[in-house]
Image (cartoon, rainbow over all chains, first blue to last red; front, side, top):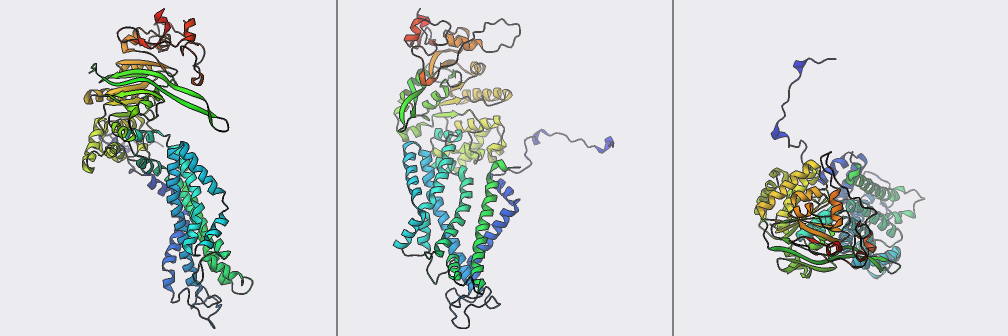
Length: 306
Length: 325
């Protein structure tokens, strides 16, 4: 098919426009976000995380019950109903309120454990990798030794020595939790510090602090973030596991782990709701974080760029 | 313009890297990357350093700036021995000595905008407030031939030549006296190389800069340098004024190197000196003259005694026993 010449319009090339870039200047994070947005599973994970956080904060407010309020007598082991949305447990406590109360504890443990890992691991690993040589050698041997400690033993020791509770669990998880992060950051820093832009900053006379926080760590942020999204569910799971062993938060405070533990004695009887709701939301949280972390890893990896 | 005043004096600079091995990481040998190199750079001149890959020219540049701690030797800059300065003194001294790097893709932090890269030296040395720094960044961008709107862009949005201009602007930000340019054009297209070289020459004139220009491209070095030094296996073998070196090379290695430069004339008669063998390993450098294993004029003394690097007349330095025969 021939197109008649008059249909064409001549476009002049303008010199002053030659340098303009159509697309706006996109930073690394914006670029990653654009890629993350296309990943529906990761976005579903992110949506679930936001939902869970909101419910953990406001969930108990929706109910007229409190997590420790007992209704002995008629209120025990009630099925889910319009009165008690998730039913009640053997002491007549509302499972809906206790589930979100448990979400508060579980999510807090997840976030704080991840935060401590982040701060300690990044500083330790970053310094070790940057200094290199003997300093690095000594610091990494310390990590190796701590790595060799049986984690369960440390945690149990902690819970025996200190008063059991949320903060004790967080501290116990953090004793060995930051080791992975330190190793990751050290490895990244070792690799990055040979880059010429780091040498350029040294030539400028930049301080160690500036090199670490302006040049090395920002360029490691991708892997750090990905690791964090896997640290959070790990800590939540560890708490549930410890509570299940009876080492968790103490009654009447609820966490998903203690609720599952309490419900286990009746798992074979009729009261399925007592096990189902905490277990369901625990699984959902782990799934959401893992899906999000997975998507984040893909989005932050420039090699995945299409 | 070149004056006779010496800005940088390098004396017996050595940089050895230990090789560790065995169970306990004992030192089992060393790589002599820079082996007893001495030279001077005069104020306002460009000293070119050429040599093949692995001859230690980059390590020399980095040792001078103490990016690699020298094993031995003195680096005297404006009367102060850089190797003896404390950390903080050296940090302040770095304003005077800057570096332009080889790989424009690796020498800029991918997370920083061009503006913040150029601003960084000003922040590090506490020069000016935020507004003055922004002005200075704009000025520097225009000095190196970029526009002020480029400041908001990230390194990946620039071409290789443009990135190298950003690297040069960063080096200029603190008004240094000496710039060590470590193969600044080797990674660029030939068409861009001349632009960047011309920019460097213009800047030298405007800002009264002194360059230590490291390269492996003999024609580039000839174009930009006032004096040229030739390195082989961690040693300086010859150093002379540019025309003197290219017209009347003394050292057999320099002669062989120059004979390898292609001449853009198909009818030109040229005598090629083809060296046999490979460069010996710097872990086990030859006794005597480093070049004796490949030298076409080798004598007995070359295998025994290391020739002295000395003036053969009118500032033409060379290290070769032939000059004494």
